[in-house]
Image (cartoon, rainbow, N blue to C red):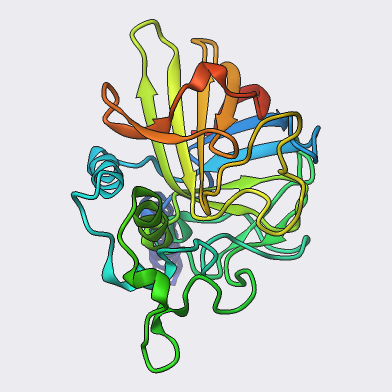
Length: 286
């Protein structure tokens, strides 16, 4: 009888060990959650400044993504056909609206396919409250009207292509690779996040959203004498020193171009543009 008890006890220990190993293996193979890198900053030279800003990068854009965006801007690559209705306005299903509260960090699935994923937009960059990201866009159907009303595309879709329309359309259909959070109740989906390391250890970071910052309010209205650009998207360029500290500027008042050296969309005349993100700091999360 005692032998049977010992055998049963041993089998129980072995079974428990196998369960523990299985759970550990499952945990290790699950997709990682949260950003691969984070940047915090404070807004400047816009009507809502100073405001705490946070960039959460879920995945970096590849060289192929870079070439795609550059080709679209140069009109040598055609944006996805499904984006034709958004060619004249990037106010469609992009971005990530949601009220504060509830939800957790966006996971890796949200990076690959952005639907109504839960995220946490901060009111402050340090330890912000959560918000529900993803689903609701600006007024229903705006920018995405190409497939409505029997599939008839708006007149703007038949207008001669321009780099601005083409890039707006491409960003509309690109996957979400991160988020820009501020004190707004809605964040902005980053559809392009390209990293450019420099020989001296510094780096340039190029972000692009499928919406114009301030699409829902006047918090991003440029101050001073700067003339606002008409883009329905936003290109952001951060320049960081080797210690991970720097500044950022945007296409709110700057023109977009192709940087011949970087082979990427970028800001034209960066040095002459006003700083929109000051005290930028890189926060490694992995």
